[in-house]
Amino acid sequence: MPEVCWLLVKVRKIGTKEARGCVGCGAVAHVRMMVATNDIVIRPPCRRDGGKFMELVRASGALDANSPYLYYLLADHFSATCAYAEAGETAAGFVSAYRLPDDPACLFVWQVTVSPDFRGMGLGVALLQNLSQRPWFAEIERVCCTISPSNKASRRLFAKWAEQIGGTWREESYLVASELGTAHEDEPLLTLEIGGA
Ligand SMILES: CC(C)(COP(=O)(O)OP(=O)(O)OC[C@H]1O[C@@H](n2cnc3c(N)ncnc32)[C@H](O)[C@@H]1OP(=O)(O)O)[C@@H](O)C(=O)NCCC(=O)NCCS
Picture 1 (cartoon, rainbow, N blue to C red):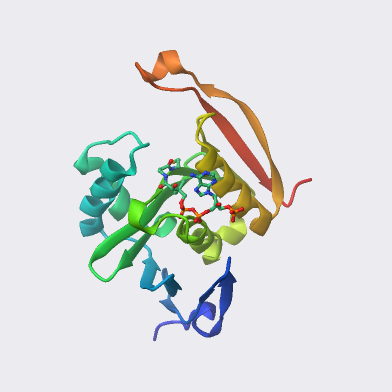
Picture 2: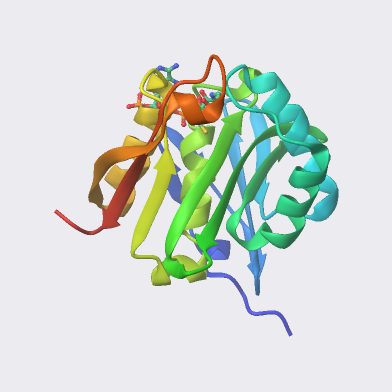
């Protein structure tokens, strides 16, 4: 008998959009929302979604594309901490994240991208919010990510998520351009102590 997810009866506001409904049980949390005129489902990915992750990264115009193999593993092994958004059969976005193996109270958010067709409608924040609404997030004390200095959209996206979950970001040097290869910016590490001042 599956547990009924609390999201089932909850109606939330995401920006100016209303996210209504949801089916969720056990480890699976599906959220259905309207983004502009698109009916979008956000859910933990399954292995076959790895190919869609790859397509979204290639279309992002900003992210390093890793191998298809990696995205299939990510979608399979880290499904509980990743989220995939689709509009019917169309891939709309995803976020990949994992709890640090030696520090599971820390969630590292790796790549987040929204298809160019769906940007600027609140979907990026909704993907991150989908993670922070899962039951295991109650055990998370810190969120980390790296953001290159010029990626204003990403900085605003994470700042907006932080407004919702509480806390302030601190930034420190982490990966530098010389380690990442040609034409790559530094990737400073941003850490959000949840609830911290
Ligand atoms: C970053 C990205 C995921 C944002 O997705 P999105 O769905 O457009 O974001 P949202 O609509 O949820 O917007 C979230 C906030 O970011 C702001 N934002 C979005 N795009 C922006 C841009 N290009 N410049 C400045 N701010 C931007 C929004 O205005 C909003 O803030 P506000 O509510 O205060 O106005 C998307 O631009 C993307 O996929 N970029 C390429 C990949 C990438 O850089 N990923 C991040 C690093 S891993």
